[in-house]
Length: 135
Image 1 (cartoon, rainbow, N blue to C red):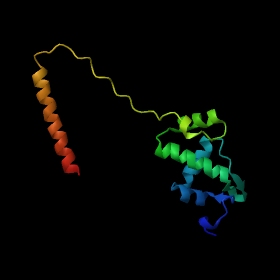
Image 2 (image 1 turned 30 degrees about the vertical axis):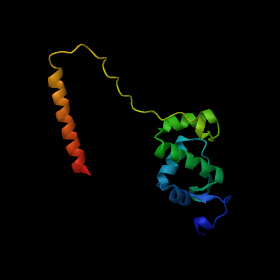
Image 3 (image 1 turned 180 degrees about the horizontal axis):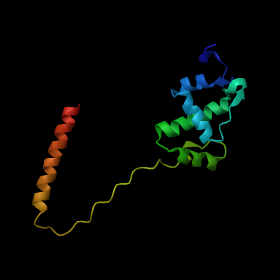
Protein backbone atom coordinates (compact mmCIF):
# COMPACT_ATOMS: atom_id res chain seq x y z
CA UNK A 1 0.00 0.00 0.00
CA UNK A 2 1.46 3.38 -1.01
CA UNK A 3 1.90 6.14 1.55
CA UNK A 4 -0.83 8.26 -0.08
CA UNK A 5 -3.32 5.36 0.12
CA UNK A 6 -3.07 5.13 3.92
CA UNK A 7 -5.62 6.60 6.25
CA UNK A 8 -4.49 9.74 8.10
CA UNK A 9 -4.81 7.77 11.35
CA UNK A 10 -2.71 4.84 10.12
CA UNK A 11 0.67 4.11 11.63
CA UNK A 12 3.68 4.84 9.43
CA UNK A 13 6.92 2.90 9.15
CA UNK A 14 10.25 4.64 9.61
CA UNK A 15 10.85 4.36 5.86
CA UNK A 16 7.56 6.06 5.03
CA UNK A 17 8.22 8.93 7.45
CA UNK A 18 11.81 9.31 6.26
CA UNK A 19 10.62 9.57 2.64
CA UNK A 20 7.91 12.07 3.57
CA UNK A 21 10.37 14.33 5.40
CA UNK A 22 13.21 13.78 2.95
CA UNK A 23 15.66 12.67 5.65
CA UNK A 24 17.57 9.43 6.15
CA UNK A 25 16.14 6.86 8.57
CA UNK A 26 19.15 7.10 10.85
CA UNK A 27 18.33 10.77 11.48
CA UNK A 28 14.88 9.80 12.76
CA UNK A 29 16.45 7.24 15.09
CA UNK A 30 18.89 9.92 16.30
CA UNK A 31 16.00 12.32 16.96
CA UNK A 32 14.32 9.60 19.03
CA UNK A 33 17.41 9.56 21.25
CA UNK A 34 17.38 13.37 21.54
CA UNK A 35 13.66 13.97 22.06
CA UNK A 36 11.93 11.74 24.62
CA UNK A 37 8.58 13.02 23.34
CA UNK A 38 9.08 10.77 20.29
CA UNK A 39 7.91 7.31 21.26
CA UNK A 40 7.15 5.18 18.20
CA UNK A 41 5.79 1.72 18.78
CA UNK A 42 8.43 -0.93 18.25
CA UNK A 43 7.49 -4.33 16.94
CA UNK A 44 9.49 -7.51 16.64
CA UNK A 45 12.92 -6.93 15.15
CA UNK A 46 12.95 -3.31 16.40
CA UNK A 47 10.64 -2.18 13.59
CA UNK A 48 9.32 1.27 14.33
CA UNK A 49 5.75 2.36 13.71
CA UNK A 50 4.95 6.04 14.12
CA UNK A 51 1.53 7.21 15.28
CA UNK A 52 0.02 10.29 13.55
CA UNK A 53 0.99 12.48 16.55
CA UNK A 54 4.59 11.20 16.27
CA UNK A 55 4.65 12.12 12.58
CA UNK A 56 3.27 15.59 13.36
CA UNK A 57 5.96 16.08 16.01
CA UNK A 58 8.65 14.90 13.59
CA UNK A 59 7.42 17.44 11.03
CA UNK A 60 7.76 20.24 13.60
CA UNK A 61 11.21 19.04 14.69
CA UNK A 62 12.32 18.83 11.06
CA UNK A 63 11.02 22.35 10.41
CA UNK A 64 12.68 23.81 13.50
CA UNK A 65 16.01 22.13 12.83
CA UNK A 66 16.16 22.28 9.06
CA UNK A 67 14.22 25.36 8.05
CA UNK A 68 14.20 27.70 11.04
CA UNK A 69 17.78 27.20 12.16
CA UNK A 70 17.25 25.92 15.69
CA UNK A 71 19.79 23.66 17.35
CA UNK A 72 18.89 20.31 18.92
CA UNK A 73 19.18 21.95 22.34
CA UNK A 74 16.93 24.79 21.23
CA UNK A 75 14.25 22.35 20.07
CA UNK A 76 14.63 20.36 23.30
CA UNK A 77 13.98 23.56 25.23
CA UNK A 78 10.91 24.35 23.12
CA UNK A 79 9.50 20.88 23.66
CA UNK A 80 10.31 20.85 27.37
CA UNK A 81 8.61 24.20 27.80
CA UNK A 82 5.58 22.98 25.92
CA UNK A 83 5.47 19.54 27.54
CA UNK A 84 4.12 17.86 24.45
CA UNK A 85 5.57 19.37 21.33
CA UNK A 86 2.73 21.65 20.25
CA UNK A 87 4.28 25.08 20.63
CA UNK A 88 2.19 27.63 18.75
CA UNK A 89 4.34 29.23 16.08
CA UNK A 90 3.56 32.75 17.32
CA UNK A 91 5.14 31.97 20.69
CA UNK A 92 8.36 30.55 19.26
CA UNK A 93 11.47 32.51 20.13
CA UNK A 94 13.54 33.65 17.21
CA UNK A 95 16.46 31.37 16.26
CA UNK A 96 19.79 32.55 17.54
CA UNK A 97 21.36 34.86 15.03
CA UNK A 98 25.09 35.50 14.90
CA UNK A 99 25.97 38.67 16.71
CA UNK A 100 27.62 41.42 14.75
CA UNK A 101 29.81 43.79 16.72
CA UNK A 102 28.59 47.37 16.80
CA UNK A 103 30.65 49.82 14.80
CA UNK A 104 32.92 52.00 16.84
CA UNK A 105 31.56 55.44 17.70
CA UNK A 106 32.54 58.19 15.32
CA UNK A 107 35.68 59.97 16.32
CA UNK A 108 37.44 63.09 15.29
CA UNK A 109 38.85 62.94 11.76
CA UNK A 110 42.44 61.88 11.59
CA UNK A 111 45.20 61.88 9.00
CA UNK A 112 44.50 58.29 7.84
CA UNK A 113 40.79 58.75 7.12
CA UNK A 114 41.34 59.40 3.41
CA UNK A 115 43.65 56.39 3.09
CA UNK A 116 41.14 54.11 4.88
CA UNK A 117 38.32 55.38 2.71
CA UNK A 118 40.32 54.65 -0.45
CA UNK A 119 41.15 51.17 0.86
CA UNK A 120 37.47 50.47 1.57
CA UNK A 121 36.51 51.61 -1.93
CA UNK A 122 39.08 49.22 -3.40
CA UNK A 123 37.67 46.37 -1.34
CA UNK A 124 34.14 47.25 -2.48
CA UNK A 125 35.28 47.13 -6.11
CA UNK A 126 36.93 43.73 -5.57
CA UNK A 127 33.78 42.36 -3.95
CA UNK A 128 31.56 43.69 -6.73
CA UNK A 129 33.82 42.08 -9.32
CA UNK A 130 33.84 38.77 -7.48
CA UNK A 131 30.07 38.76 -7.15
CA UNK A 132 29.61 39.62 -10.81
CA UNK A 133 31.82 36.73 -11.93
CA UNK A 134 30.10 34.33 -9.51
CA UNK A 135 26.70 34.87 -11.13
